[in-house]
Structure formats: C-alpha cells, structure tokens
Image (cartoon, rainbow, N blue to C red; front, side, top):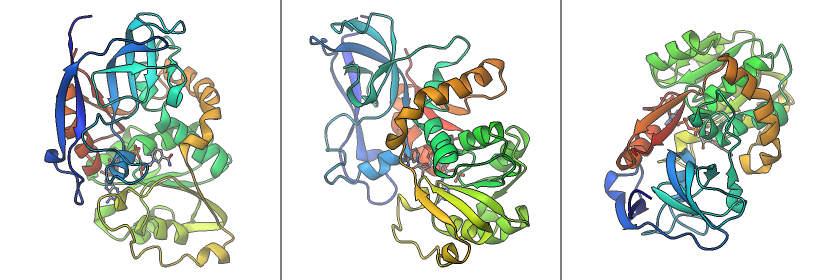
Length: 337
Ligand SMILES: NC(=O)c1ccc[n+]([C@@H]2O[C@H](COP(=O)([O-])OP(=O)(O)OC[C@H]3O[C@@H](n4cnc5c(N)ncnc54)[C@H](OP(=O)(O)O)[C@@H]3O)[C@@H](O)[C@H]2O)c1
C-alpha cells in the first residue's frame, strides 16, 4: 500500500437549487483495513450522476450529511480478505466519491470486472455500465425499438444520450434525432456520432425544432429531460409511438412541477405508450449488453463517449459541471494516482 491517508467527499449542507461547492467537503481519514469477507479497493475512476442531485435533498433514501457520498466506481484490489477477490483484481462497486473503499462482492452489485481485452476501463462506467444499461433497456425492452423506426432522444450528447444514439444505430434505427445544450454538442452529434439531425434546445421551442427535424414524425422518444421536451415529443410521435421515460434533468435543481407537458391527452388520441425506466429493474440484461457491445468497442465501431476530469479533488467540480452540461458523453473522474 502506497499511502495511509484516504480521502472522501462528504455532503455538509443541503443544496438550495443548484448545488454550491460549499455544500461539500473533502475529508481525510486513515485507509481502512479489510475485515474478513471484504477487500480494500483503491478507486481508479468515479462516476458523477444526475441521480446524486436528488439524493442530496435527504429524506428516507437520501444521503446523510457528514458521511462519504456514494456512487459507481471502478477500482483495483490492494488487499483482500475475500476469497473471491485477489490483489490486482479490477472491481465495479458503488462506494465511490472516495479514494479507498471496503468492498464486498455482490453487495449493491459489486462485481469483479471481466476486463475485456481492447476495452478501456472507462467503458465500465459509461456504455457498459449503468449508463449503457439504461439506454439498452430503454430501447430494447421499454420502447421495443424495431428496425427502420425513427427515434428522438433528449440530452443526446450526455452519457445516456450518446449510448442511446450508438445502440439505436446498431439496432437498425432509421432516423436518429437528438437535442442538446450547445452548438458544439449539436455538431458533435451529427459529425462524430452519426445522428441524422440535432438541435440546440436554447435556439427556440423544442416542439418547433423537433417538428422541423422530423417532419414525418417519430416512433420512439427516450426522455432524459422532461418538461417541454416531453411535450414536443408527444406532439411529434406517430400513432402507437412509445416513450421510454428515463429522467427529467431539467427539473432536478429547480421547478419540480413544470407547466409542460400540456398535451398529455394526445397519448390517448394516438394510442401512445409512456413507461418509466429504472436501470435497477434491468440488471439481468448486463451480460446481454456486454455480448452486444464489446465486439463493437473492440473494432472501434463505437467509442466509450466520456468526459474525464483528472484528479479526485475535482470530483465536486465534475459533478457540478455535469449538471451544467460541461460534459460530452458520460462525466467521469479519474483519480490522480
Ligand atoms: N432511470 C434510470 O435508471 C436512470 C439511469 C441513469 C440516468 N438516468 C437519467 O438519464 C438522464 C441523463 O443522465 P446521464 O447520467 O447520462 O447524464 P448526462 O446526460 O451525461 O448529463 C446531464 C446532462 O443534462 C443536460 N441538462 C442539464 N440541465 C438541462 C436542462 N435544463 N434541460 C435540458 N438538458 C439539461 C446537460 O446537457 P446539455 O448541455 O445538453 O444541456 C448535461 O450534460 C438524467 O435525467 C438521469 O437522471 C436515469
């Protein structure tokens, strides 16, 4: 072991609206010793996610103040008293937002990573992680996307959004349309990711921009944003269209009851289906996801689509940046050692 000091991010105050840097503190402690049945893991990569924002409000399932925050992480075993884990093993676990963690296999989905040759570590927290699994479940299960169908996804340049674009293309979608928060992201979607059309939602009403990008309508909408995006998509969907509702990131820091959608009754007129997607209900698809994507990651047909912030002491900055839209692809933090 190279250090005796561990560091963790604690939440020390409840955010009022957008989280402030002062709502968090970096706290040092001694690196813990593994107890029987656990392994000490040095974290290598951390994931900062929109769902963290909701948990920061507290409540029954929320984060407690003044304890290490938790999140998805990939790390390397440095000492083990768990017969299933050996020194040097790579593991996925949920004890993130800290440099060191005691991990028990199977707890909260903790697992030894297969380490597919040719697949970067970042993939296990992006397209092969909860992000990709959300996209895969939304498309294959909830929306049951069929070959030749047209798709719209919001927050398209983010983690789930880019994964939706990649996976939908591999599944044979016809037109893929995305919305994002800047001209650079729009260019990235069309240029790098092969979207057929994209628009910046700041440039005008979503409904109008979507109607222009998809004049013949869409079959499937994967909603990451809610509000006016959902309203626009309901308007653009053809009869028997499906909405896989993944998140409502526009509402996490402020208005929890937006005015839109005001056209919900069109769901009846057009026989639409609206269904929520919770990734934890679809963990049985993990192996299928890997079998489907790993060959394409190896050949380079698809990438991992990440923005990686370097340094544990920038975790809070990365989290706040992700909520502001600083990321293209999944926002991750690489620990500095
Ligand atoms: N249901 C589940 O199990 C599950 C699992 C994972 C994720 N999710 C949800 O999926 C969505 C995407 O998550 P992610 O991890 O992939 O994050 P992400 O999309 O990589 O990052 C969040 C993005 O949200 C966009 N954004 C922020 N404020 C916005 C606003 N007011 N209007 C429109 N866009 C806004 C920003 O991009 P722009 O620059 O484009 O604004 C930002 O990059 C979130 O709603 C999240 O809660 C759900």
